[in-house]
Length: 402
Image 1 (cartoon, helix red, strand yellow):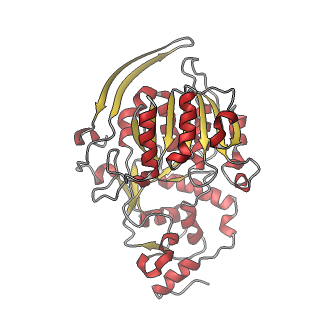
Image 2 (cartoon, rainbow, N blue to C red; image 1 turned 90 degrees about the horizontal axis):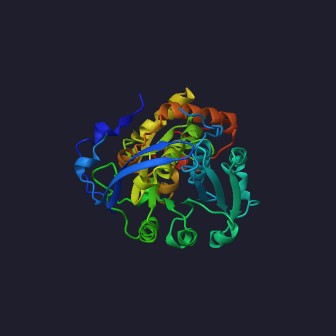
Image 3 (spheres, rainbow, N blue to C red; image 1 turned 180 degrees about the vertical axis):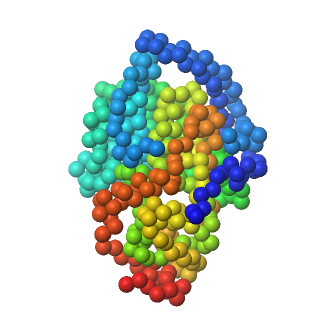
């Protein structure tokens, strides 16, 4: 049986450090009609969350945009600055579709040129779904964002592109000068320092010189209303960075699945719809979200071995797991496996406590959906090379599959 672990059972007795930077915690009750929106809130700021306040407390892969009626006072104009490569591109795609389905206006600006080869990959090949839902898609350079988006006004801007201040500053400065009311940023859970007390929670120590950390600091000094979101690994239709596919590639071909170390290392794998729903919560609850950092992840952990077993179960096939010492393959170690060879697991405590957000990731079921698409696109029949795998198997004196 795959090892899928509940974070509330594993880590309920931990007492991590208090949350920093300071948070503004609000409770808001909103009554919406066609002409008015009443809101009452109680704010505590600055606020440092103590260990006592940090206790633990399916959609299809291609969902259609169905507009709902939103009161004019609640409808937001949102600009998404989207990366043109890597695993994060799918976040902007799902976020745009969820906003549209909630009745908001969306413009997604993808960095680069629409005619580039990068746009021949998902999720960009599916941007027509955004247009069909009433959204706008444009391309351009963030250095000229004011020109690219000239004549448009926005209530919210999400930067899902920059990894350092040089990349984010032009967007942030333009948003500030344009009077944007809320600025959101996709950061990374990879900025946390390694800990002896997993999981990572908001307020844990970060790498001070990390680019994302410097961006978060700049945003806190520039905007009255800002929030940062730190994702980990993700799955979902439209993702162009391998996650579950790495396991399927080996399982369907009857190859051993090489996993570094003991295989009991914990990690977090979220469906991208969880990330988009958390971001949407922030857009629709700006006072509560303001000034906060959120781990943008699901609320369950899985072991590395467990991920292999869950992928095999989703495919209805057996799996042979082999463990190896990464040092035995030298410089190939980082390329040999898609996840970090250590406990790398964050929890979404702030989103649950502050935004009232709930995770919908169900990894065993979500992987079944992902396997169906894997087969549908014919990847199970694609010719592949496994040179690094073969090197690992040779060091373990395991016969290399023909």
